[in-house]
Length: 249
Image (tube, rainbow, N blue to C red):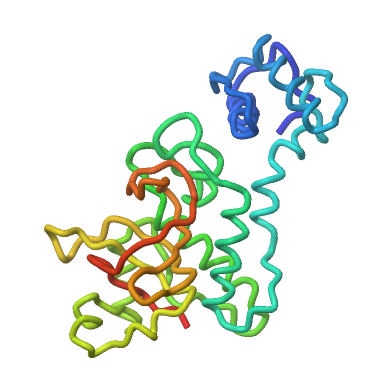
């Protein structure tokens, strides 16, 4: 990004700054035009961040704007021993930074991070969020840093990969007693199954705690109502109905 950036600039880099200004609490349209509203928003953010309120985006201002994403992307440091525990640690790191969409459905810097640059209505990002966390967990392992499954932007692909790797636990198996609920440890992936189509999975996330009749989770592309097309990463409580699972070890 070409810095310093100031009033009169335009283009994609201005859009990115405007997105981050909005994510940091200044509601601003990301139109790529660094006009008076953007300049005033920069001053407001700089004051909040205890920087000199020049209205000009310099290196220090940009660094402060994107600090939440930079913290979430840091190499994972944890004393956790298992891959699943590391996955939960990564999920909690991201939850702490409150990743969310900006600029429309499935749009913004956080979405592009998880989807490797893709965004828009065609790219729900719950599976991408899980895949990004799996990569972080794997990269934190010094010896044999491999992912249990490849990962995908698609919930259906995650299910197929898990079945091929013998890591899939169906709800029917839990009900029949052929698989035990005690296998569902924190760091397991949950998959919300379509009630009308048992071969279609609609949403996914990371199990962080398991109780007798419900579990806690951290998930992306959802909201407090549990919508499959939400707008943020959040913590939720879910029941076991219409749920299948992927064990990661």
